[in-house]
Amino acid sequence: MRSIFTAIASAVVSTHILVLTALPAAAISADLAKKCREMAIKNHPPEPAGTKAYAQAERDFFSQCVSKNGEMTDKGPQKAQPSGQ
Image (cartoon, rainbow, N blue to C red):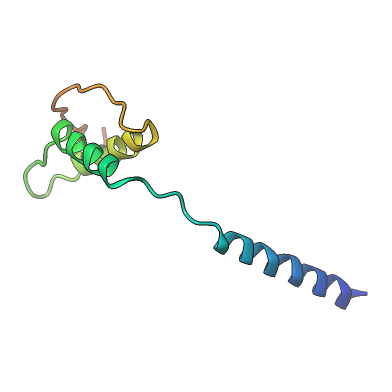
C-alpha cells in the first residue's frame, strides 16, 4: 500500500515539475526595463561608497515601476533612509 502512495506522489511531483519548467517566465520588454532603470536612477541617485540604503530604495522603485508598467509619477531625487532608523 505504501509503495502505491509513493508511486502516485512521485508521478504527481514529476508532472508538477514538468509543467512548471515548461511555462515561460514573464519577461519585461527592453524599453520598459530601460525606462524604469532611468527613472530609478533619477529618483535615487547613487551616493558615496559605503552607503547601501539608496541601492535598496532604487531596487524597490524599479520593481514598483515594472509592476505598474512604467506609469510612475516623477518625484525627483529622493534621499534614502539610513538603515537602522
